[in-house]
Amino acid sequence: MDSPGAEPVRAFISYAHGNADHEERVLQLYALLRDEGVDAKLDRPAAGQRQFWPQWIAEQIRSADFVLVVASPRYRDRAEGRTGTSVGRGVQWEARQLQELQYRDATEGTRKIIPVVLPGEDAAGFPDWLHPVGGAIYSVPELTPSGVDELIRLLTGQPLYLEPPLGRVRPRPPRRVPVPRRESVAKAAAGRSTPPEALTGDAHERVRAAAAEVAARAHNEASADADRGYRDGVSFIRELSSTRELQGLAAVGFDVTKWLDPLVRQWGRAAAGLDAHPIPTWAGTLARYLGSRADPIGYDEFAFRPSDAYVAGFGDGVRAVWQAAGLGRSLLAHGSIAPSTGDQPRRRYDPLRVALASRRGTDEVTMTFVEIEHLVGPLPRSARVHRAWWANDSKVQAQAWKAAGWRVGRVEQHGERVTFVRTEST
Image 1 (cartoon, rainbow, N blue to C red):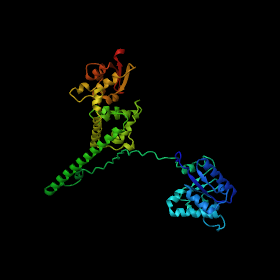
Image 2: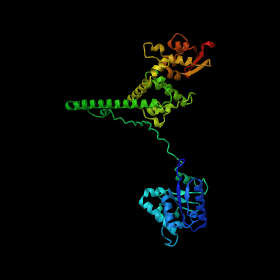
Image 3: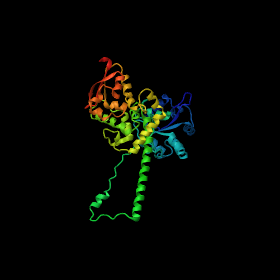
């Protein structure tokens, strides 16, 4: 695109005389180009004074940034030398100049020479040396500003489409295809009439060596899986828009399996329409790494199941970023994560206390068990089985909600919901 003060783009129009309608359309194109800021050059204005046309043509082609070749049957015949030397000398001279340009520098010739088709014409009006089939052709559907828009964009360096910025390749773990298990030795031996001979001597040593090799390979594979999980855990936490989702993972010591169990149950209920809480957007991101361990719906793209070593490494990677950022200390100071000290049982439910204490403008709050587990980690089995676990007594969990000024009003263990009622309102 031209910058302020720069020379305008110059374009020479090469066309054939002999058809009044075609010449009129070329004049309209010439006027449109100049109106759009392109310094178009045509032989008609130059004919107002005596010219030595071979020199004038050569100078126009040499000085132009672009040469627009306008298609017509007469142009094709004259540019290919089919009409004899006495007919259309101007086009024949221009054609030789343009062929010389292409022959000298094919790349520059392709850039500079622009084939143009006006209304009423087609690409059959170009000479073969312009490559009308393999090369780009610029059609002007109508002689209006919008009709010449594509051509103007080309001449002035203003493309209609720009490439968007290149993003980064996001990890997409492969789907693991299970290998069919071989028939067990015991099952195979059951069909034999005589038991296999006992392993002795060299055979026994080979078995021991093979077992050691398999154990070493399994160890190496587990180490590689753990390393890959660690790297993916680091990548995952970088993709999150907020660290709030990871408070539950921190509360269970970054044990990914313990953290996922209640989450997947909640997402599964939401997917089945049994829970009003939507599946969070970051759940899909998590499933890209952890596959079926984090996917409650069973999408094919998440059908793989990473190894235990990978999952453990994933948790270690998240933990490393968490600790490096100082999040453990800052959230502990705000009571969001239970400290890993001797008073952990007593302080485990502090995140629930903090969450309830921060509630304003309502005297009643209903939470799902999964929401509570997201704060404090997995609830004991008795919370889902025994109503007494939710009693407003002296148990550590009751001390948490009572200290925040709330008490348990209703418990729906089948629906896994509990309603807290503000103490002041009772």
